Amino acid sequence: MRQIFLLILLFIVGQWLVKALRRHDAQATQRGAGAKGANGGARPSDAPQLAEPMIRCAECGVHAPKSDSVMVAGQPFCSAAHAQRHAARPTGRDAR
Ligand SMILES: [Zn+2]
Image (cartoon, rainbow, N blue to C red; front, side, top):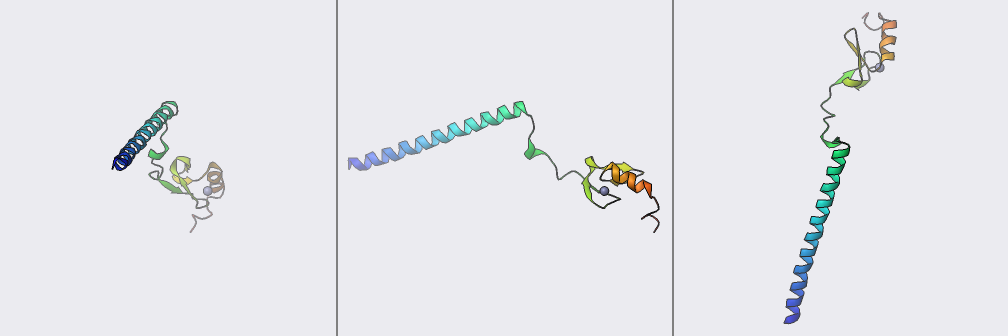
Protein backbone atom coordinates (compact mmCIF):
# COMPACT_ATOMS: atom_id res chain seq x y z
CA MET A 1 0.00 0.00 0.00
CA ARG A 2 2.86 2.33 0.70
CA GLN A 3 4.22 1.75 -2.77
CA ILE A 4 1.03 3.17 -4.28
CA PHE A 5 1.34 6.31 -2.17
CA LEU A 6 4.95 6.58 -3.21
CA LEU A 7 3.96 6.29 -6.87
CA ILE A 8 1.31 9.01 -6.47
CA LEU A 9 3.79 11.23 -4.71
CA LEU A 10 6.33 10.69 -7.48
CA PHE A 11 3.66 11.50 -10.07
CA ILE A 12 2.72 14.74 -8.32
CA VAL A 13 6.36 15.75 -7.94
CA GLY A 14 6.95 14.99 -11.61
CA GLN A 15 3.98 17.14 -12.67
CA TRP A 16 5.23 19.97 -10.47
CA LEU A 17 8.69 19.70 -12.01
CA VAL A 18 7.29 19.83 -15.55
CA LYS A 19 5.20 22.89 -14.64
CA ALA A 20 8.21 24.62 -13.09
CA LEU A 21 10.34 23.88 -16.15
CA ARG A 22 7.65 25.19 -18.51
CA ARG A 23 7.31 28.36 -16.44
CA HIS A 24 11.05 28.82 -16.58
CA ASP A 25 11.09 28.37 -20.36
CA ALA A 26 8.23 30.85 -20.82
CA GLN A 27 10.03 33.43 -18.74
CA ALA A 28 13.23 32.87 -20.72
CA THR A 29 11.44 33.33 -24.06
CA GLN A 30 9.65 36.42 -22.79
CA ARG A 31 12.98 37.89 -21.71
CA GLY A 32 14.49 37.02 -25.08
CA ALA A 33 11.63 38.65 -26.98
CA GLY A 34 11.86 41.72 -24.78
CA ALA A 35 15.58 42.04 -25.43
CA LYS A 36 15.00 41.63 -29.18
CA GLY A 37 12.24 44.25 -29.13
CA ALA A 38 14.47 46.67 -27.25
CA ASN A 39 17.28 46.18 -29.74
CA GLY A 40 15.42 45.94 -33.05
CA GLY A 41 12.01 47.37 -32.25
CA ALA A 42 10.54 45.69 -35.33
CA ARG A 43 7.58 43.34 -35.06
CA PRO A 44 7.31 41.60 -38.43
CA SER A 45 4.14 39.69 -37.52
CA ASP A 46 2.27 42.94 -36.87
CA ALA A 47 3.29 44.61 -40.13
CA PRO A 48 0.17 45.08 -42.29
CA GLN A 49 1.82 44.14 -45.58
CA LEU A 50 -1.44 42.98 -47.17
CA ALA A 51 -3.08 46.32 -46.39
CA GLU A 52 -0.74 48.13 -48.77
CA PRO A 53 -2.56 49.04 -51.98
CA MET A 54 -1.27 47.47 -55.19
CA ILE A 55 -0.98 49.36 -58.46
CA ARG A 56 -0.76 48.03 -61.99
CA CYS A 57 2.14 49.19 -64.12
CA ALA A 58 0.84 51.05 -67.18
CA GLU A 59 3.79 49.79 -69.20
CA CYS A 60 4.19 46.09 -68.41
CA GLY A 61 1.03 45.36 -66.42
CA VAL A 62 2.90 44.03 -63.41
CA HIS A 63 1.23 44.60 -60.05
CA ALA A 64 3.56 46.34 -57.61
CA PRO A 65 3.07 47.79 -54.11
CA LYS A 66 2.23 51.46 -54.17
CA SER A 67 5.28 52.37 -52.08
CA ASP A 68 7.55 50.91 -54.78
CA SER A 69 5.67 52.44 -57.68
CA VAL A 70 6.35 55.62 -59.64
CA MET A 71 3.50 57.95 -60.55
CA VAL A 72 4.06 59.87 -63.79
CA ALA A 73 1.31 61.96 -65.39
CA GLY A 74 -1.31 60.28 -63.20
CA GLN A 75 -0.30 56.77 -64.32
CA PRO A 76 1.38 54.24 -62.06
CA PHE A 77 4.54 52.42 -63.10
CA CYS A 78 6.49 49.65 -61.41
CA SER A 79 9.78 51.48 -61.97
CA ALA A 80 11.16 54.75 -63.29
CA ALA A 81 12.56 52.92 -66.31
CA HIS A 82 9.06 51.84 -67.38
CA ALA A 83 7.77 55.37 -66.82
CA GLN A 84 10.47 56.69 -69.16
CA ARG A 85 9.78 53.96 -71.73
CA HIS A 86 6.07 54.72 -71.59
CA ALA A 87 6.70 58.44 -72.01
CA ALA A 88 9.01 57.77 -74.98
CA ARG A 89 6.03 56.45 -76.99
CA PRO A 90 2.92 58.16 -75.61
CA THR A 91 0.68 57.19 -78.55
CA GLY A 92 1.43 53.49 -78.19
CA ARG A 93 -1.44 51.97 -76.25
CA ASP A 94 -3.45 55.07 -75.43
CA ALA A 95 -4.27 55.69 -79.12
CA ARG A 96 -7.11 53.18 -79.02
ZN1 LIG B 1 6.48 47.93 -65.45
